[in-house]
Image (tube, rainbow, N blue to C red):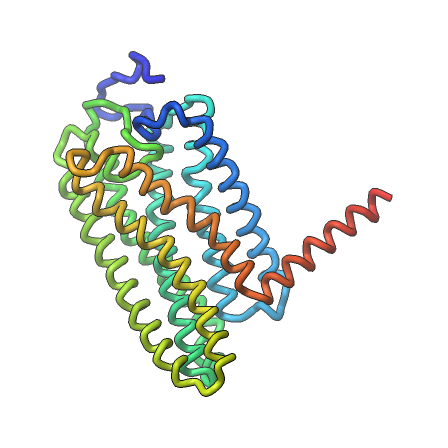
Length: 324
């Protein structure tokens, strides 16, 4: 699908061309179908969670507040990349304007920075709920929850704004073909004809600081939680606490493992790690968590499962009543 028009050279190209996943061209139709299905599940599942939590006053608790924000961030993260990827894989429309490319990059990386902060907030919520249950509502007040959410968002903005500014002001006088399925920072930086090392180092260092500190605090929280859980006298209470925390740890593993692998694999280069592996890792950590998060929380959390069933049942019978 790459034609002669892809060889434009200019200081600030009006258009970039996304290569997709190199070597997987024969599977593009199946990739488009799979991504469309996953995106539909992510949108439907996360919007259901947001709707249920907002409508049901019994779910206006800290854990569900953070879950609601996480669902909203998942919608933003998936919507930033999947529609364009489906367009590439289904119709070959790989062009993206200069401004749209950097807007996509900003939202993708900012959303990932917010998500890791939310996973830390959810780990702190579980720590307070299990280790300090009598002080739960006094510690996690609405003001504290809002403050945590605003701090997480400000941290993401502070991280992404300088990175986007540094990269967008580099001259792009080489190829304008991005060897990726979306405008990933490292892939775009390699197209610059000036030295992209400052922005690349900034990205690596601050990503490592944010993810490393969040993972360290999350690990500390769950270590304390496990110690508290095994001190409980009731086996039923132990199982309930472990079940809730297990689903949270599963979500975190789905996010952090491919995400961290994607960050460091990009630095190794195509000589050590094939380009298609780098792209697939980057795509997986953006689409799998938004798809599976609502399924995991919907199935594992009884209150959400019951409220979603109630909402769907009400909508179904309301439609049947109107139809008759």
